[in-house]
Image (tube, rainbow, N blue to C red; front, top):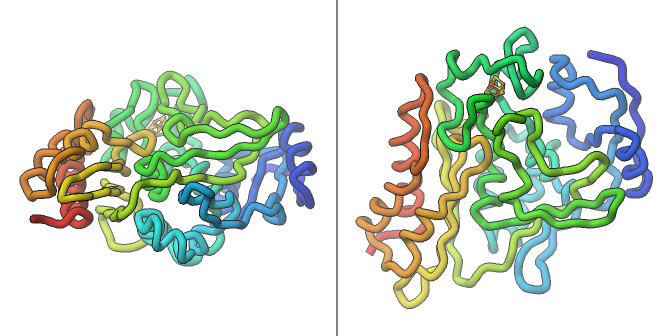
Length: 326
Ligand code: SF4
């Protein structure tokens, strides 16, 4: 591990000052410390933000939910308001990582986590994300776990977070605080597709701090849930996943929120699936027809062609679980 300085910020102002000078924020440390041990990340200064007052979960005035950036994954998953208003968020968190990691890792850190591409973590391999311009070993290497949507010739790595898929489906936004004040970014714009610069992963600026993730109010009743398909039933990343939320009134789907994980370079919102659902009556035939739209634009690699069909089946199954059949 390379040498680094470590300071603990007592106030938000202290944290922002240290961040502006180039310090890297750390709280749970469940991603960053691993990467530092592997010398993939070599920050010169760490700023511990775990004492900042960002641990509140509250219902917003309009009936949405605001989750502080330092609330742990396990606290978020267990929170009564999260469970009752947006169970898709609780389910996505409970299917992530291990119980020990969920106790340490925070919501802000979760959405900032870096890819689990094995070549990214192997400092002897070519990787444009770690070393811009060096190439991408996954393109013609072992790419079974990699993305089929949003890829570029520079990078085909998936975003590993499950809860980010739920946030993308629900059209959440990210609250940031930085030297220039506060700003709020739609979740869909926060995480970046790789393009020619896979080393740039978020729209966050130097010194900015994530303060919260906010889920907007959605019409009620709302049924939601998360399905994760993986090689083993715990402590494994998704091959495919689906986050679904449906508002059904008078026997007709009035609102549909759907996103997929394990398949995109970012959590993959599925607007074509949503359009196919809205205005229709729940039925087995509808779930099948809507899920057919899930893999539009997919560009599978040599090792992950199976994900195209698996994605459609995952979305179809989760639509059936959440929407039921008539
Ligand atoms: Fe690196 Fe992305 Fe290629 Fe993986 S897929 S080796 S992260 S450039």
